[in-house]
Image (cartoon, rainbow, N blue to C red; front, side, top):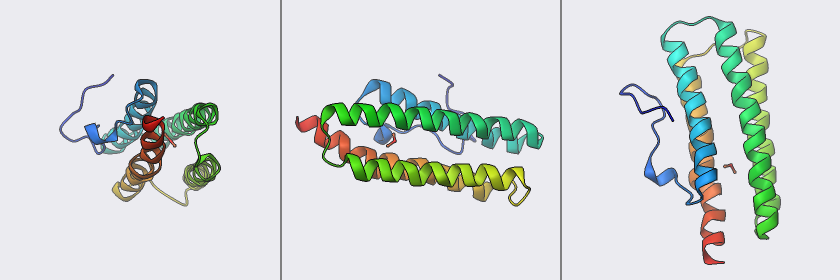
Length: 138
Ligand code: FEO
């Protein structure tokens, strides 16, 4: 796991922990990709390098969502259907961003980085914490 650096846009915080080690590891992996994208932007890397990281982010997002949904299904989580819908909405947002980047409708800016940070942080803090609380009581 990469250690936090001073100018990381998305440092890991204890409040992001859902208390399930494998899920936390996956969330850390997603956070790392957003930090990598930010570092590439700051370093003035070319669009091909950034497209590659965005592709990794999409792949890892889909894999994490799929793992998490299977875990929630198995646990009988009451909010599963809404959680799946939210995952679909988030996946569409990041694939739309990838498409807009590919067609030069959007550039990698600090605003886009902040959007990606909020995109993931808000989901973890609001929705993932909902299942973490319910699963903890079972
Ligand atoms: Fe960890 Fe619901 O994504």
